[in-house]
Image (cartoon, rainbow, N blue to C red; front, side):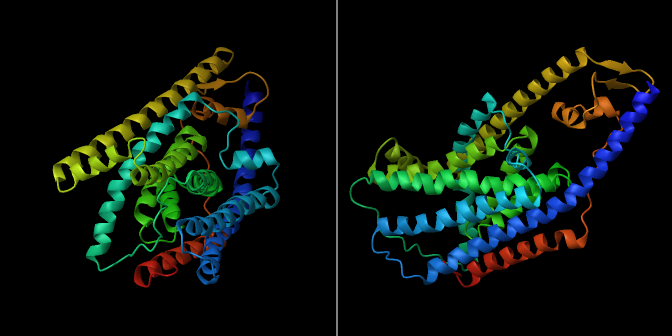
Length: 384
């Protein structure tokens, strides 16, 4: 038993060195990926601002959105970060996906993110409305210059907007923001630090003063789900449903189908009735919390079941009060089973990487740049 424990400690020590060395490289990889996200977004905004695109009709507006979204989302938020994580990070395709929390398995309880996304959409309406009032009180004035929608329902434009506004951001933005960025953040911060850092980053990367507040809160919730459920899929589903609902109700309200008029009547009823608004959003907040709790319960139940199955075939080190798994010592398997405390002892603490200034100076620089651009959109309406 002593020989086994000594071997186990030696392997664990090598594993810690490997993790910390890889963390330094991954911090730099994420830095370069964030440059792609932030820089690519600014570049496309400049191009869209100066290039002579027609904007006489709503269809022209959607076409402009398509050019911007395809380039920004697919190239700068997905393809470039994926390539950096793979080649600079020295990973296979599968390892790159796992690095970005794209797990191999999809759990049924992930689908609870569908009603969660709809509830988040309702809450976003309230949060963005409050934020708009605050901005207006400071003198900020935004004039929507979007062309009027067509007289008859444009099915093609509707599908296009679902793809551009819901599907692409749900995949590409989550891959960048709740993928590699969150992976390196959790190597340094605890849950609270990761949630705040990734939420603020998501809000600033929209580079729009009108969106920064509610997108920050959304990013915090998405980061929390990804951390606790150990998968990016619930955040992707929630993101898609939230954005889909926004597009759907825009069209439903305009063309009065599938409850669009009922939605308008609900807003009309709540207008001027503060108590009604408070009750509605309080109920939505309770629903969001309840759904998250159920998802966490389902995940924890699965973890406990897997631990029980592993312990049945394990031994127990009474001297050190630890579980000894049968077979070759495998830190990765222990991490997947979430049995670090049981195997390494109750005093186990995950090794954290403390990045040096040169490891995070690019991340800080990108953060400052996106903050300045967001401020510019408030002061001068920069590119908006």
